[in-house]
Amino acid sequence: LVSGISSISQHLHKTNRGETNGVSTKNVTNQEWSISSWRTKPIRQEVLYEDPAGAEIAIARISKLPPIVTPTEIVKLKNSLREVALGNAFLLQGGDCAELFSYCEENAIDSKIKLLLQMSLVLIWGLNKPVVRIARMAGQYAKPRSSPTEMVDGVEMPSFRGDILNGYAPSQRTVDPHRLVSAYFHSATTLNYTRAQLSSGIADLHNPLDWGLGYVRDKDLQVRYQAIVSSITDSLRFMRTIGADTAGQLQTVDLFTSHEGLVLEYEQSLTRRLRHPFNYVPPNAKNASSSDGKGWYNTGAHFVWIGDRTRQIDGAHVEYFRGLENPIGIKVGPSMKDKELVELLNIVNPNKELGKVTLITRYGEEKVEGMLGAHIEAVKGSGHTVVWQCDPMHGNTRSTNTGVKTRHFSSIFNELRSALKIHKQHGSFLGGVHLELTGDAVTECIGGSEGLVEEDLSLNYTTFCDPRLNEKQALELAFLIAGHYRG
Ligand code: PEP
Ligand code: MN
Image (cartoon, rainbow, N blue to C red):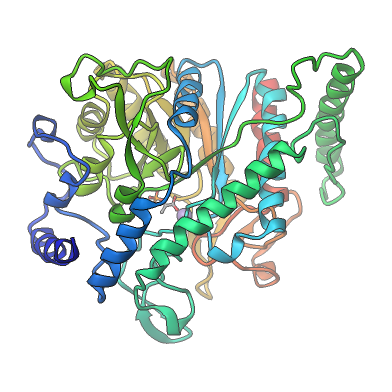
């Protein structure tokens, strides 16, 4: 195994050079999938370990550690996403761009759980549908980068690739394989605390929630938001009074975890052949390979997605993902061709299983009009039914004159509003949103009802990758989506 990674890395390094731009006529589905078949494909965002022996030891260690999530939970999410694909539920996914190991801390976790809960209540109120909640948390430690190096305070150094590989501090930029094991334990600890808090009443709707809308500068807006909150709290009070909570449903909620499946040796080490839940019949059950009642589950998160930089049809990431039982996401940026999108769906979901694939569109406010409609039509024509999720963040990243990465709240909302409209025009519907957010009072995105301006960015700019909505901006986006549906 030790020589495995290094020789494979060298091989991949070579094939990388000859890689096409993501479009291939090869039908990879004809080839046998295995847990390591991705290693024979060209790979983007590859990790070249200076200490390959250390990487082997780390991967071997993780391979022996218990699953972080189980097939029963994973299938439960896939069933929930089936409802989203059919239009009976809405998907809210959010969290940090780059989750740091240091965010594995009670306040940061609590505030993210509470924010996702509050946003989901607003969305339930607005859409009159259940909301499926997925956190970008407990494993979102790997970042794809546009360039292998970056400038920090005028010094060029290897890019920060996320805590799973290297540290943000200039002295920690060398990839350290011990971090792989650390990623496992930080994921497990974050999820353990989340589970403990959920079962101890952090999401107990019998307790009043703190909505604190005092920050909303525009008085009319404040009145509008307050009316929504009053309506939600009145409904909850009414349900409590009449004892509608017989099954304890107001005491806790489901919260699933997700991350970008980027570092494939890490993902592979957590991918296990496990028995399907007893009431789950996978769509490929007739195939000999699944006749033992088992399947390959990525047990590091309930939901994993392929990033916009690693979705090449003939590439390693698509190859790895096509063998999983988990529901998966695919980021769809402006370079995605209609045919390529359909080809991707055929590869990762040949049985057209409902709830299996979430397409996470992220074109940017200017490009969404020119792209989304054609993608919707292409998918329709293919016979696939997907969850259409809008990520209004990643196509709208801008740099200020002083080089600070930011996003305008209005651009984010514009892309979202366009997506809602375009889906409607095409007889489709938006199934969910994918947001970068934090429960803390950061100043990373401009705008919103608190009126943050460019000069405010330096007040509390703490992200180590992309700018996140703060808790007020995130909640406001939920109000705006709810308002869109309620009129
Ligand atoms: C991200 O979600 O942080 C990300 C890198 O997105 P994308 O792959 O869409 O660029
Ligand atoms: Mn990001």
